[in-house]
Image (cartoon, rainbow, N blue to C red; front, side, top):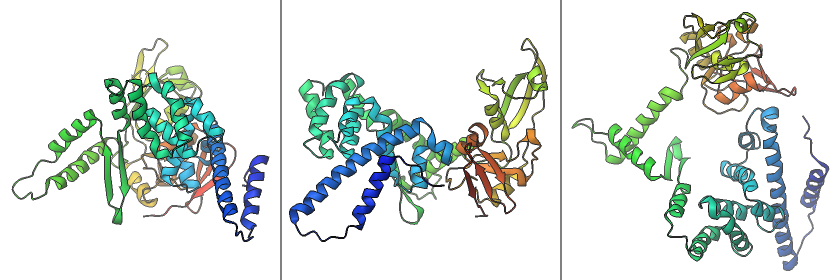
Length: 403
């Protein structure tokens, strides 16, 4: 599918191609530095337009409709943008509209992308009440100093305002500094680093102490090793409840109460009621029930319970395992690397779909939502590949094989 671009962007692309093709030898040092300076300014201007276009695309949910994934996932998985750079761009997309002065300075070319990101980060460390006061000073600072000096300048501003010793300011800044990084190193190992808030740090210490106790005299692990193994036990306990797909049965029990008249006339556009009292659409009800243990509860005209059915499961344990092995435990959507959680009926039950392995596809939460509630359709082709079709007719195919 050819790319659709606006005329100004097409002109920029043509200018870049012309620049690439220019192989003239430049010997003037002044011209070399002048070219470099102007190119940096042009790149900054292009990035500001990029951020604005991405914001408009995110607001229109464009990547979900056309590519079947969120904006950041589209950057990383389709355009191969590095994760940290994609995160920075999305932070600018989301946060700049909250700070109009910074956004205006960025759009005008008065500050660079890195300066804008540094200002947003610095403002996030401050209580809301003083952000509008501090923001203009940070912008002026950014016009004269490198981005890495913005954070330190905040301290000077707070001292000048007489707020540095304020407990709320310090608490807000500590909260903004929280974060954990997990980075892949050699041979699949991970390096863990971060800063925990006081309450999360205390909870983690308690959990590690409980899960990392010595297992007798033969336990010769160091404290660090026991902490590592304890963290693994904590993660496994969480995933057993929320993460890994279930092979012994459905991952959840869904009780959906609907009026008898709606049931008799087939669930179409009516709204259903969850046990918690939450109201959900028919599409959401079908998605939740697609891979669940279902207990039908039929209500009369006055919401009285007329019948409570028996719990039933669609896919057997054998089918669930077979589908997982067939596709290598991967989501059926092209290039998706999310954790699979739900087994989907490719042909919906209401359309005559069976509970066989040929009609089953493991999906992550997002792509299960996509096929039930976002207008996408899924088919399994003769060669075993998965054919996805967007609401606009764009098609994508994924070929999977046993891992």
